[in-house]
Length: 189
Length: 51
Image (cartoon, rainbow over all chains, first blue to last red; front, side, top):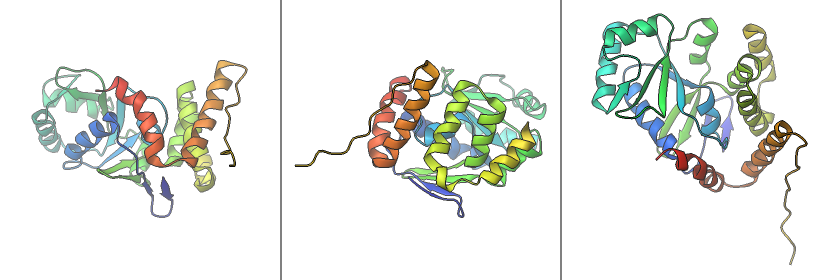
């Protein structure tokens, strides 16, 4: 695994898991319509953490209802369903109210994608410093390593989150910007 | 013939410490093995739950 902090790129020559393939498949649809950043647990898993998850958390940029309708139409066309509602307007209203909505493969509940709009300036920052993970079969935009560590270690703070943060911190220790982690820590607590 | 130098996992005294110790052990494994080697092992866990 090679991380270039200046270029905000991580090259991973891994054998893709079924979860990685599932994510790449969904992101292929999503990125045609909207800017996105994958955040939280799946980022640690993508980078080697030995656990799995029932959901993949994703921020999407705030978009209009028209744009969302087109995205939703294509999501459905590709065999996914929304766990929260059927009508596009209802789903969009949840997003507008800063609530997350979930999409899974038809007739399945997990794993699912938990999609949400950024709810404040800190969340919006995830779009400014995202890192691109380059895999053999595609690319994924993930939240910066410093952001991952700060949120998991100082905001979410469950055992699982602290362990996820520790995994990333141990793996990239020499390449992390600790000033940035501290600034994020101050902003979120 | 020289023996390959092998890292061993230090057992933790509590479940929490044991888990932390394993994370450090696993990260060291990842750093000393190819992406293909560690991911093939990681995939045993993930693919057993997600078909």
